[in-house]
Image 1: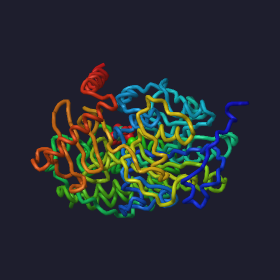
Image 2: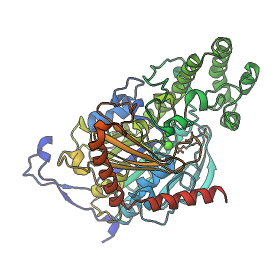
Image 3: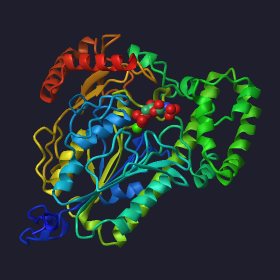
Image 4: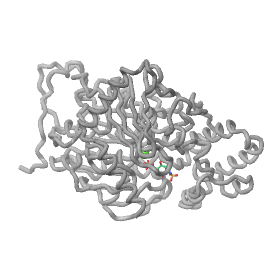
Amino acid sequence: MNQNLIKSLAILTAGMGMFGCSSSIQKEVQRPNIIYIMSDDHAYQAISAYGYGLNQTPNIDRLAKEGAIFTRACVTNSLCAPSRAVLLTGKHSFVNGKVDNVQPFNWDQDNFPKLLQANGYQTAMIGKIHLDGIPQGFDFSMVLPGQGNYYNPDFLIDGKKVRLKGYVTDIITNTALDWLKNKRDPNKPFCLLYHQKAPHREWMPAEKYYKQYTKMKFKEPATLFDDYEGRGTAAKTQEMNILLNQNWAGDSKIYPEVMKELGIKETSNWGINAFNNNTGRMDEAQKAAWDSIYRPLNEEFKKIYPSIKSDKKALMRWRYQRYMQDYLACIASVDDGVGKVLDYIDKAGLADNTVVIYTSDQGFYLGEHGWFDKRFMYKESFRTPLLVRYPREIKPGTKIDKLVQNLDFAPTFLDYAGVQAPKEMQGESFRKLVSGETNQFRDFAYYTYYEYPSIHMVKRHYGVATQRYKLIHFYYDIDEWELYDLEKDPMEMKNVYDDPAYADVREMMHKKLDYARDYYGDSDANDQKYLKAYLDYQNR
Ligand code: SGN
Ligand code: CA
């Protein structure tokens, strides 16, 4: 018999009782399909199901309503390419080798799509992957080269470059829908990786949404004007400040000629290029629509700039609003795409047997501590949104507060597919946790970050988090420890590492950290190895 046609059987026994099926009834079920939806830099604060009140994401919220929301899901390394390597391999960065955005990724190593493929699944990857080389493990792949572009983007279709007309988020969604409707083999279970580029910098929204969002005003986070008192050198020396480090043209969309007129110097030497490249890809109609909104916005700015230019707070406030308008407008298109895919699988009768996941490659700062970007093990970038719907096993309205990580995706998906995870995979399946069959899960999360010195200047660090505490070590050109009490100080404003009242906690967390490093096979020698590789790469 054709291996690919063999449908594995699963026995549904206890646990089905809560969905109205008698536990005595044994039912044969097909292996589930998997739709893994991942966006890029989507902060959980910008998903309405998380309750921050910033924006509305009704379609993503459906997953929380009809399935589960994870309130403390987190990543192992808060950066794009490393996060994707962890997703695919189920191994920490220092094991899969992709520790930062610059060093190469080895596609020859094992990954979960390869294993699903070998076990009869049809697999596809559509959208951003940000890992060089030809993707392995997919029957079909259509990916953006590198970061990709928002307007009229280039794609690599099974390795061949084509330029497609339109808005990137819509193109990725339409391609995913087309694959689901017309390209896949209905006789096989499938695994689709549907990866948006949005809402990555420089936040270029679709016409429908910039028209709406540029008129909106958003609430400011409590720590927008943080002075980093109570934190260490790393928080004080980063380059992620909205006022100081966002580009005027590239990020805030101030036209270069307007900057000139107002005497504004661009923040970085690529800010104006970024603006020109992004708008330069538009065709005449796209550009005219863009200008019809962003030109008047620039005119408005010309009027107010003289009165706020020496008022740092007012400038920060203006730039924060500008940032949120474009960032959240990008998310509106992402949310529409999720709605279309959910509608399709519901109408096609696939809903019951499809695990749908929504997540981001990491979290993001939306003005907390005055920041944008990610990288730190601090809350907003360490956490990532995670919502999962699988009607056959997950009760609607489930909330999970365990420290599930992106490291756990590969083993979880293999578990759903009935495929044994290789013992080299370091994550843990959360299938039974989210179905309610168990409430046991690893009680810590281990984290590493390597890309320094680099853009945003976030120092190298590693650390361990538990539900209650977080211990971080910043190294290389400093040697500083930070300890946070997440219950008393949820915004992580006060490092209590040297507070005598926390002596016992400090010792306990050091033990946890030693345990975690040992458990995953990390060490100072690893840190030095990757540091040397990075510096060699930069000086090559
Ligand atoms: C670009 C961005 C940075 C971002 C990195 C990595 N600047 O360099 O802000 O941190 O990508 O992002 S940009 O103005 O050139 O877009 S990641 O998501 O790919 O890791
Ligand atoms: Ca990212």
